[in-house]
Image (tube, rainbow, N blue to C red; front, side, top):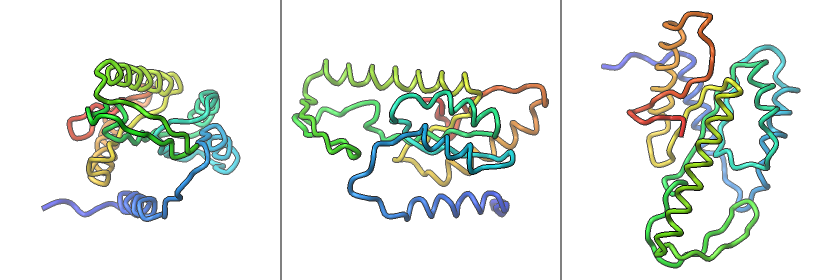
Length: 186
């Protein structure tokens, strides 16, 4: 028998449900995390826990603002990823469309070199993002869209709470936490 959810866990689950149920537009504007982080600096007054939930595909130049928000608030970066973000399956010729710009690209996923370059670029991007978060002192959580997001988030909150109570106050710094046996920095 599992323990009842805390008020904070219930609130997190409510937010996740609202985000999941929110209607998705057909075409979305380009993601600008810099504008989002600048808004957080203006809107969130007192020190708060701020969740930045994204795939982190954004117009560049938001790393300075990331550091500023992390300095003022407790910031948690939640990276949502699709299983195809890092590795393309061999499906043959495909037309891929950018949901933000509508740009279409024809690719042949039979080409082993293309799939390898795609995977290498995705890995490099994950490493750069992880390094940026670490420099800013931001905790990171990676969630795969093919997983159980609610279960993973509740498990992460519990792991993070245990870590906070076990860690001395002087031991600061960003961490990547494991959820369900997965390393979350990637």
